[in-house]
Image 1 (cartoon, rainbow, N blue to C red):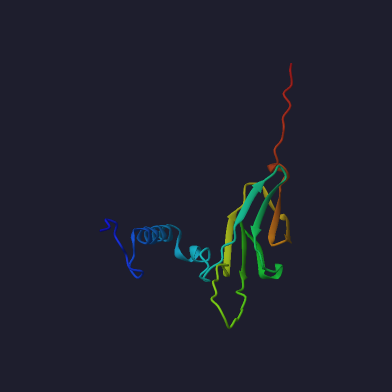
Image 2 (cartoon, rainbow, N blue to C red):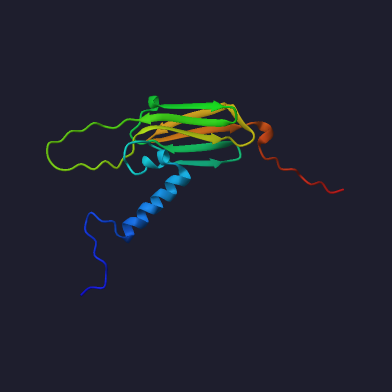
Length: 152
């Protein structure tokens, strides 16, 4: 006789229950619409982004594989950069086998607060190999200055 519990396929075991509870906790904290795209159920797509800063500019890189530049909108609204767009689902029909769709699709919008000294008139955007790169220059007064100490 086994001392371990046995679950039927249609019953939730402890791992499945734990996973469900963790999903619910994350969904409650971050909100379901943002997470759904990560899991591939087609409701929302949220591109991964890197933001870094050099002495002269702020650089934002967003992963947008499979998208065309015309499907992306970039705006500066006040002190924020807004990137939005839509990755459309590819329609594919096959007569045999099973399908599993894990790539997320749908509308997205990311808003980033720009650091002090960003110059909204110095913005360049390029798109290469599925990565959108946005470079925002800094105003001259925001750049670091080295001050020489004089001896008297």
